[in-house]
Length: 341
View (cartoon, rainbow, N blue to C red):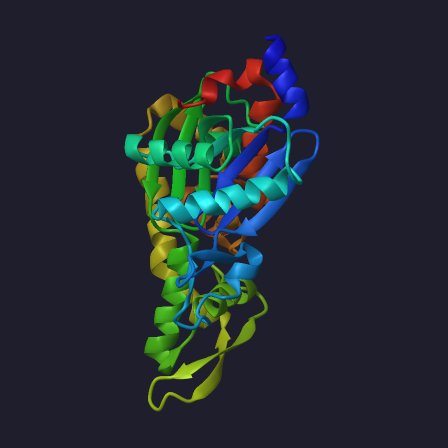
């Protein structure tokens, strides 16, 4: 106990949301200390790191042959172990503000449907990146804690966490996930759908960053009172020349209707497979929408229209998961049971 307290004093405990699109770190008493894109740029000739995070994201689609810009996570799990380890190590050093006497204890949130092999990959990458101890928590549970839901009570709470690679739908009761539904349709799939639509409709190839900017600016799940427009630029397929077109929210709504429908279908399946008492609780309490996908304009209204459930969105849904993960570090006695390793 003494050494545990001593380590906590000199070390810095961290909560990490290791996401497909972004990685966030939370430190007790400090809040969110890092929020960077999950991207790393390498010089393939010398095997050296050129950029990490926000700077590396600008390299996507713009690199010469000797430079590789990598997103090492796919569909919410590690796809490139070595690059992930290097990225986490960089972020940990940045989050703890230099060297510490004691390595940090880290709690990492992971998708609810994660396999044992994927769990081991996350733990090993964090340990090799400099953690002294690693605990895992499921993302929907972390989101519920971050939003202040009464997870310890015997009543159903539904969480829909839409990240970059996966959408996690979970029903939580008595500090455990009673049912979960994980689909690999989320922010990245919406970006891809926008790229495909622009190519098919306008014969224009746009980059990943341009598609994401389009999503942020004008993507909607339902028609708006005032239409939105956004100009996108790319390469014209017919002759390879530069070209730009103006997209409307109607264009983008048409482009993303399939991934949005898949997310709502996952919510419906979860309701169908959840015990009736818990469904009755959800009907009373509504569902929590978290993650970057919660910012999609009109999605809450569309979910309500198609499921008859109230939808709650926190003021900052992008950090709900990492804040909830951080709360478990601040109160081990209350939240010790929510870890899954």
